Length: 290
Ligand code: NAD
Image 1 (spheres, rainbow, N blue to C red):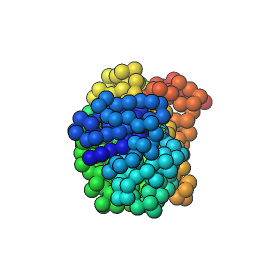
Image 2 (image 1 turned 90 degrees about the vertical axis):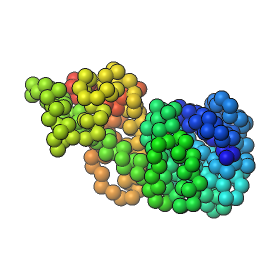
Image 3 (image 1 turned 180 degrees about the vertical axis):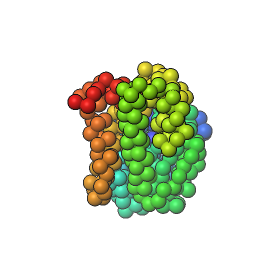
Image 4 (image 1 turned 30 degrees about the horizontal axis):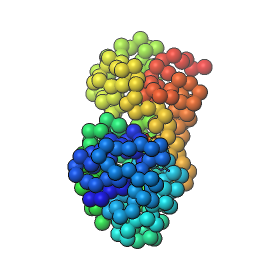
């Protein structure tokens, strides 16, 4: 398949590399001048999109996605697919899809989970929004870049699934960390806390699979001095998107709002930037109620 790939950063470059390795003809473009080995390189986004059956975007935010969509849509052939894998706000995802469909193209939003490791290994999970036809066109590419793809519904449904999942993740991580910090102050051994909670009703992915306490539970970023993993900065981005969507949809999300505020303080006013999102535990550990 002839593929245009726009946005070759930490995620985009390894994803494009996997498509090249699978035998696809990839033309890449990134404003930072990044090139991918064995892929062709274009001078503009429109040039990368020209003649492609699928144009994949992997960009930082919705504003940039919309700008890039405006550049590539006129260059794409009727019936081609615009496949956005970035994490962006639901409204931008829907706006880009509407413009693409109005121009006779297919559009799918398919944000990912699995991070840089998953992008390199080709084991990402895709959460997709769009038509059945668009999803079917993208599916063979999902199978190369990932291990699972869920068709969540119409345009924007992929982004909705991603931010709802990550809102739960952020809230749960904070809950797990504050419970460990409370347990410390009550003199409860962390391993005992894990042994009980991980098999009791307080269990969760953050406790059982990604335990924020070093030396407890399976290997996690806590065992590597909280190097990400999933950086607090990215968690803050996703929590902000969840609250932007909640405002737009008039949904009451008090815990999501509080989680956003806590990660904003951690990243912007404290030492959270560049650290894994489980580094909330050492943050709480140092604090009292005041
Ligand atoms: P990144 O900043 O490393 O990559 C983004 C790339 O887009 C950069 O190389 C930048 O130069 C390029 N770019 C910016 N504007 C452009 C334009 N107008 N035209 C062409 N290229 C442009 O970010 P990343 O970590 O690769 O993340 C990409 C997306 O994936 C984000 O939306 C992010 O939220 C999401 N995501 C990231 C992770 C992760 O662990 N890094 C995990 C899941 C989802």
